Image (cartoon, rainbow, N blue to C red; front, side, top):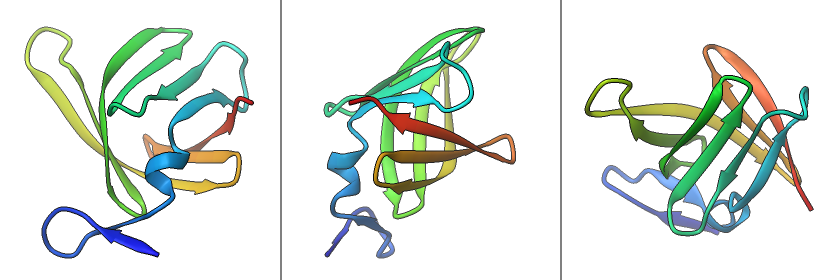
Length: 103
C-alpha cells in the first residue's frame, strides 16, 4: 500500500512514516545515534556534537532534514534513505551509513 504525499505523485511507503519513529544507533560506533520522533522532529548525536531539527519523508527513498544554520537561518537538505526491518541506511556525503533500531 502506498500513500501519496506532496505534489507530483511522490510516494512514501505507508509503513515508513511509522517505522522510522525510533532511536537508530550507528552500526559502527556506540557514540552516535539518530532519533526520529512521531511529531516530525529528530535528534542526531555524534562525537562532534548534537543536532536537533525537523524531518519529512519526501518519497519512498528520500528524507528531508531541516536544521538550524551554523550562524543564522536554516539548512534544509534532502538525503536518500533505505529501511528494511531494523536497519536504516542514510546516504550521507556520498556514502551509505547504517543504523540499527534500538529495541
